Amino acid sequence: MGYWVLHVDLDQFIAAVEMLRRPELAGKPVVVGGTGDPTLRGVVATASYAAREFGVRSGMPLRTALKRCPDAVFLAVDKPAYDAASADVMAVLHEFPLVVEVMGWDEAFAGTETDDPEALAADIQAAVLERTQLSCSIGIGDNMLRAKIATEFGKPAGRYRLTADNWDEVMGDRPTEALWGIGAKTARKLADRGLHTVRELAAADATALAADLGPTMGPYYVQLGRGLGRRIVEGTPWVPRSHGREVTYQENLTDWADVQREIAELARTVAAELQDEGRPAARVGVKVRFAPFATHTRSATLDSPTLDPDLLETAALDVLGLFRPGRAVRLLGVRAEFERP
Image (tube, rainbow, N blue to C red):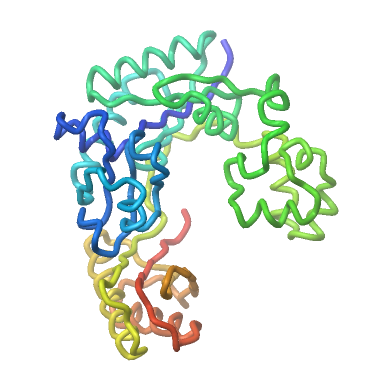
């Protein structure tokens, strides 16, 4: 009996929930985002596999998605429906002999001792499908990093095992961006230092990278390249680390006074929602998307955690002051970050 980590990832989750409610959409390109009107500003929350074949991706402007896939069915985001569907899936997972660590709507890690993790994964997939009519892919690993990455090789509705034994064979020649935790910006930094592949990153001098990229992140990237990560799944409930609101404006804001007014209103909306949750903010962040599509974020730590709407509004406006006015604005957001446990 060995200890295994399973990463359960629901396939095209939001789109799948919508197709369950509208069976006639099965197999069609479905795009969920904003109000569901692709002629208005907004971004794609998720796209069905059929829509992805046309190049539609999460985070893409809805108007771009419409150009790439004019025959797609566009739907509005329905958060309560996704909350309920996710809760049903997680309830199924908790019926198995697993320690479950929920990561969000559509994914969770599970730790267990078993001599046949593939058979267990197949049982989980069958139970989730039977009880919720949703399919999931499951990555199997000897730690959480490898299990997470393995899931991508199992999609859709499949299983894949990635461990120290096959890490180099499977991942060595892949770009560093294939690693969980390395995005395009970091991949470019690594490439500038001659580190293009996972194998090259794994062989890098951690001390030299620490001096170059920071004492924490430099060695961390090397660990990622070697497939090292947390091994034990913790059964703590998933708690959001932040809460925020953002608005995409159908007409650009060109007067900075209007931007300030909108930020103040967003901050008070977030404050009211925090009071409902009873979780004070420890840090406030502001997101500004300048026209046509340049997005920047800034944040600041509060003197002490607070639920006071006046203090949150003041903090948000102070953070907004870190931006340089003068350009048209198409999106604004305010985010409250909670204290880490």
